[in-house]
Image (cartoon, rainbow, N blue to C red; front, side, top):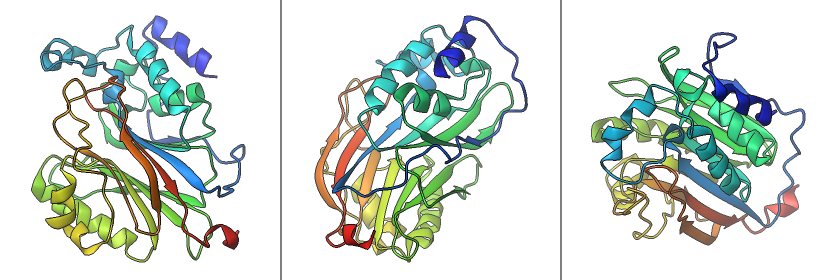
Length: 286
């Protein structure tokens, strides 16, 4: 399927219908069979633009509007990384507009990486100009997936919640892309805090545009007991990482076996990976 989609960049194609959020469906997705650990990755892919210098924000800015012949090769390289993970959170994807050759990048990456389940959340619909989206890729069938529009003065930020396991005590993954504004972040994290309040096993992952210390001490997340990556987990900019803007935060019940900033500069952000062990006794519930 993805080979067929790949051919679309050979020319400018007209979309078959109005672009919108989409999902692969779950019929072909394996049931969640909890192993002793789950491999997580979050990656802001900057719509497939390979940025390796501050000057590229100017010289390659046109790629945010128009298609580029190297974009599909960049997506293929990203897909080769994603093959090694169980659940992937994607930010700054295009859902199928002119700039992506009318390709749903979430779907493309899932199929190129051989990951059976994908879910695209369309957050800012600019018609044929851009389809700003978040994405979820999963090797397991979730109990359910819900999407949420995050509050903010400027609309267009969102979160995806995927629940796995059993209904009364699930593993809850929240995938998000927060605003740049600190005021908006306060409102958005307050909203997310309410969504996760009743769950014991929670993972927050995505581009949060703030350092972990600020998130866990100066926002509504201070009311949680979430565990961050080390302060040295800098992911931005990818060519000279100085800021920790991308995060995977987990409940204490989830043991962090390994975490790292992945040296894979295909965007202006580096991906963050984490291997977490499910809580003791959790496996016996299935």
